[in-house]
Every structure is written in structure tokens, then in C-alpha cells.
Amino acid sequence: MPSAVSVQQWQLPRGIDPGALDAVPLPLPLKALLFRRGLTEPDQVHALLSDSPLPKPDGHFPELDKAVQRLHQACLTAESVAICGDYDADGMTSTALLLRTLRTLGAEPQAAIPSRMADGYGLNCSMVNELHADGVRLIVTVDNGVAAHEALSRAEDLGIEVVLTDHHTLPKTRPKALALIHPATTPEHSPYRGLAGVGLAYVVARELAERMRQPAAIASARDLFCIGTVADMAPLTGANRTLLREGLLHLHRSNCPGVRALQQLAGLGDRPLRADDIGFQLAPRINAVGRIGDPQLVVDLLTADDQNSAIELGRQCDSLNRQRRELCDAIEAEALALLESDRDPLPPFLLLAQGHWHHGVIGIVAARLMERFQRPTALLAADGDGLMRASVRAPEGFAVDKALDHCTALLERHGGHPAAGGFTVKAEHVHRLHEELNGLAQSWIQTRGEGILVAPEALLSLSAINHDLWSALLSLEPFGIGHPAPLFWSRGCKVISQRLLRGGHLKLTLGQGDCEREAIAWRWQQTQPLPAIVDVAYRISLNRWQGEAKLQLEIQALREHHACLDLHRGLGVYRCTSPDDATVEIENPSGERLSGLINRNGVFETEDSRAGHPYVADLIRDACIGLGLLP
Image (cartoon, rainbow, N blue to C red):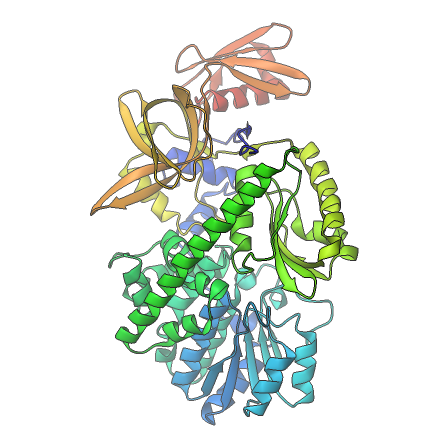
């Protein structure tokens, strides 16, 4: 079977101005990584640590007042309102948020979420016709709608007004709607630019509750905002960051029975929650329902008023999540068997098709294969009438949306963004499509190179990983898209013990001097023995087990340690060594040497005049970072 990619390209972090963030009360490694992320002024870091109040949204969304006015009227007259959501966590939490709010404020809302298997994504004409027959004259879309041209035209023909809230790419022609609430309609630098569907629903609900002077109507709205925002991997900047930081303080004490039920079933206890708790514990239980079950189950759970009912509905979500995991594991095993049966080398673009695969989970398996083999990956399942429907995932740098645009002539429909997408194709065109995608992927690989790019942001000694550092890390949370959890690295760690756990995870004990730290490598794919001394790239987490909490390293990459560092510049290789903890020696391709010392202020000192040349200064800086003498 083709092996998982083991080649690694380690990219050194760039140098920093050691005095730029002196006034910031954080450990030096954290100041270094924030500087490298572009926060080069103390005021920028202070803004990250303590969010400024958000501006009023009505000054940022041009049609928000029109939307709120229409919904206000619906609440005053107990009007029937349809909330058309999506079957992912963002869409389902958005739907539940507006259902709870509008019901409290006097309207008669109902959910209208399409089936992933029967209807596909978003508002459609059939739904509009059925809602009209039920007497609905106002539809609010959440997390969908901007591309539903036919359905919106049909609603206009039938006299149904539509308040459209969506964060997907706007078409060139404005969608037909009474009001459009979309991040792209806000000013260029608006903090509301990164809102997901549930964020837009929250903005609408909050403005409506304020207008009607009933703040209690959105008592649980912030909790649903937190879950949907993290689950949809929205950028955790701007309004998302501000609202999430506030919301996480209270989420564990939610007054929404459904949210409490999910936390109880996930075993999260009564402690304050982190974004990771949502991403790894709550969101999967919600997303699983939309993938292989009826999304109405999640809506019922998140709008339940009775705790016992919520627990029962939560158990059903839990059961579907276990089924989802089993289904993913089975499809992944089958996909790996297909790759093993092919004697040819691994293609640049992995494309695998089986008619019986489940549409709802092939995206998850495509992501697993992409991570394992570092190749763009598409998994296809039958879609009836000779068609195949696919989910695509790709490593950073390969643009899925552009690749599919290039193949438009072979596709029935397609969409997505750089990291992920989907398409529908006639079965007879699959082979030609694979040839086209292989050509695009091969060009990308030739430019990028094989293997995994490892780009740690700051150096740590194992002894520096303590609860003081952890407390400082927590002050930078929440982490997510746009503000990821820091990737640290440590140099020259001894592998004291290693043990393979059930599920293919590797448990390690690493040592550096007198200090030892536990580490875990999830879904470890390598089969060769580990070197005795390694460099490791990792994230830091808190492992809670049997009532005890311990800091652990979550290994992202690992390589054999070498005392010498080779810096490649053009066609030349510069060999760098550090005989002790302060001395740096660099030998150029001609055998000439330059040496110096790192003083206690982190400044390189030498009497060699060549060190003043910008090219040589860059070499010295990279050597010091690569040898572990600078953070």
C-alpha cells in the first residue's frame, strides 16, 4: 500500500525585534510568536487580550433595519414565519436561535431545513411552494439563500417576502429579497466581516429583541452563537472573537436544556468551556445528525424546553455520532484498500469512487486521506441518473475552487473555496476529470515539493512548559481560523518511552535535561522506529483523565535531531553549529567560517566585519533560530 508521506520540510520562523513587545506582560516565546503574526506594537497585543466593545451593527449592515422592522411586525401579529436553514451545525444552530427568539417575541416560527440526501443544499422551489400552501408569507434564510435564484424568484411570484441572511459568496447580481444581511455588505474593515450564518442570525435576533425591549428573548442566543461559530470554523477575529470570548464564560451554565444535555453527554462537567470543547465534543454530535440523519432532530434538541426531553434527544444525537464514526472508519478502510490494490505510484490527485458510499461523510474521509498522503483528494458517491457527487479536500496551497473552475466543461455543477469543495459529474466523465485534476496537482507538487510543510512559530524548552505558560496561553484564546493555536518546537529531545495506543495513537515521554514531558501523536502513520534524539513540533493541551489534569504535547511533526544545521540558500549550503549554549559557527560553501556569541539580551556579537552585511546578518539570524539559541 502507498505509505503516508513522511518527508517534512521544516521552515524556520523569521527573526523578531527583541525589544518591540517589552511592555507586553507575556512570556518571551508568546511575544515572539505574536510578533511573527504581525502584532508588532504593544497596543495591538493589548487589543487582542482585551477586546473593545463592538459598534452598533445597524451602522454596518445597510438593510438590517428593514429586516428587523418586518420581523417586528410578524411578532406583533403572531405571523407564521419559516426559518430556512442548512443541515450543518452553523445552519442548524442558526435555525434554532431564531426559532427560540421569534417564539418568545410572539411570532409563530417553523423550521424548514432541506434533506441532505433528498433535497440538497439550501432553499428550493419545492420548499417555497409547500410553505406558501401552509400560509407562510415570510421566509428568513440562515446560512444559505444567496445562490437560490429560482427559489427566490418563485417566492416573489407567490407574494412571499424573504429576509436573506447568508455568508456564502455573493453573486454578481443581488439576490431578490426584502432585505439582505451579508458580511460583504458591511464596510471593508468592519468587525462583522467574518460572521458565519449563526453570527448573522444573532445580530438580527439581538436587534429585534432590543427594539421590542425584551432582552430575555435572546437569553440562550449567545450559547448557540458560540457553538455554530466554532463548528463552522469561522475566523476568530473581530466580532466573532469578541462575542465568543464573552460567550465562553457562561456557556457551561447555559439556560438552554439542549446545550446542557450535549455538555452532559460529552462529559464536560461544570467547568468553563474552551473553543476546543465545542470543536471536538459538541459540534461533532450536532454535525453527525446533519450528515446521516434528520436535521430536525438537532433543531428539536436546541429548542426543547424540558431537560428530560433534551437528554433523550441528545442521546439520539450521540448515537448518530457513533454511527458516523463507524461509517467514516469503514469508508476510510475501503478507500485505503483501493489505493493498495493499485500497483501504480500514488497519483498527484487522489480520486476514489464507490456508488454505495454515504454522501454525508465522504468529506470527512477525504480530509483524512488528504492529511495522510498530502495530496488533493476527492471521494465520489452515486447520485442517481448516472451522476456522481463528490467532496474535495486539499492541502494548503492547492486551490480547490480554481481547480474545479478549470474543469467546468466536465462538471454538472461545482462550488467551494480554496481548501474544500464539491462537484457533481456524469459517471462517464470521471476518468477524463481525474486526468485533468492530476495534471493540475502535478504542477502544484512540482512547485511546492513533496511532503509536509512544518512551520513552528516559537522555540520552547521542555522546562518552560508549565502552568504559568499555560495561563498565558489561555489569555490568547479562543484559537481557531485566523488565530490558530500556537505551534511550538523543541530541539534535541530524548525519546524516553513510546507506546502505541488503540486507535493508532502514539504515546511518548520526552526528556530534555532533567525535565520530562508527556506527548501524544494522534493517528500516527509512521511505521519506522523513532530516532533516539528528536526535534518536535507540537501544540500544548491540557489532558483531563480520571479527575487529573496534566499538560501534554500534541505532536504535529517529528524529525531526527542533528547537532549541525544546514541552511540552503540558492545552490549553496551553509553548515551551522553551536558548540555550546551561546556560540554560533557558520561555514559557507567555500569552507570559510564566521563565529560569534549570543549575549544575554539575545544579540549576536562578533568582531568579524562580514556580519554587518544584510545577507550574512540574515544567515546569522536563521542559524541562531534553527540551532535553538533564539525563541
